[in-house]
Length: 238
Image (cartoon, rainbow, N blue to C red):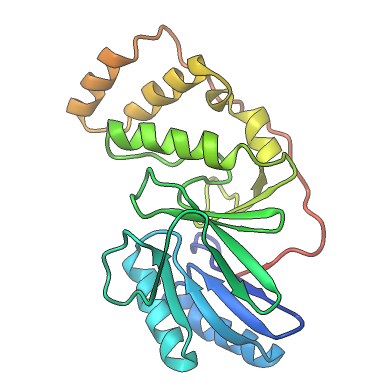
């Protein structure tokens, strides 16, 4: 339901009460989302932000104006449009369904992941092919901690739905990332991750990182990965 390269948004609905939530909508999604909900008799309760993105807020305010739904984000998000601010461990209910909030800072201080059943909606924190680049060394350390302690601790069959396409991929699993990314398995992998990601940082940060992480080689990421094929009952990606 989405053109290639458009950031995905997600809609989850409770089949009993018909209440629904939307995660990370974009302006281009609004018309399709509203038509989808009208066709299935869904009532929008929450519009969830995984991180602060002006385009997401723009779409959320339009959806809120048409439905009365509340815009939700992490408590550190500085935006006047936010109606409900959450912290790590909070639970959101929509009908008989629920989502748990995981604070996963790194690429953004207000980044969160939403945990629903055996699925994680990770926003920009963790993509289908691994981690996205950060802007400074402190953010890299924080991102690594979020990924290893908050996300990769889930069972291998847990599915990851990111908020951004990566190398044409929009879906992965915890098990696939564990097999693919040696970066997240031990301290040597951590040093390799920090040094490799530092190549994308400004020159000053690169020099600082090189002095802190004295390693002789970087663990290369393999291109051939184990592809996890999800079951049928997956949420709609827009």
